[in-house]
Length: 217
Image (cartoon, rainbow, N blue to C red):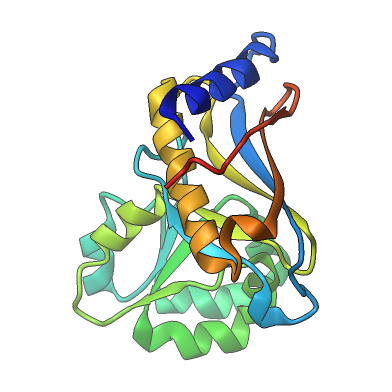
C-alpha cells in the first residue's frame, strides 16, 4: 500500500468520529478466509510490539522476590511478592479485580509453577499468564516492551480486532503501527494476504473504514 493511501484511510477513520471527552482507541479488525480455525495451530495468537507505542497507559504487574522487586520499582505498575500469592489464592474474587486492571504480568521464573497452580485458572482464560524472567535478570526491558505490545487473538472466530493506537496519535505513527501489525499477521498466515478477506480501521465511536492491505510490504 502506498503510504499516502494508508494515511488517507487513517484520516477518514478519524474524521468519522466527533470529538469525545475521553481518549478514543483506534482498532484494526481483520476478517479471515480459507483458514480452518477449528484447528488450534491455525489460530492467530500473537503479541506484537507497536513501534510507536499504544498511545495510552498500559499497566504491567510483577511477581518476584524482594531483590527482583527492587529492579522493577520504576517501571512496573503493581508489584507483588511470594507472600501475596497465598493471599490471592485464598481470595480469588479479590485477585480477579486486580487482573481486570492489569494488561500484562511478568514473574520471576521460580514462582511460575506456584502461579500456574494457584492463579492459573484466573489468568489463563484471560490470556494473562505471566511472562517468566530468570532470577537475577533485570525485567525492566521486558516490562517496557510490554507497554508497547498488543495482542492479536483470533481464537476460533474469523473476525478479530487489534488495537493500533489512539485517535490523538499522529497519522504517521499510526501508519507505522498498522504496518507492523499487518506484516506480522501476513507472515503467520499460510497464504498471507490470501487468507485475509477484508480489514477495517475504526475509532472507538467512529465508523469502520475499509483498508486495502495489498501494498503493505
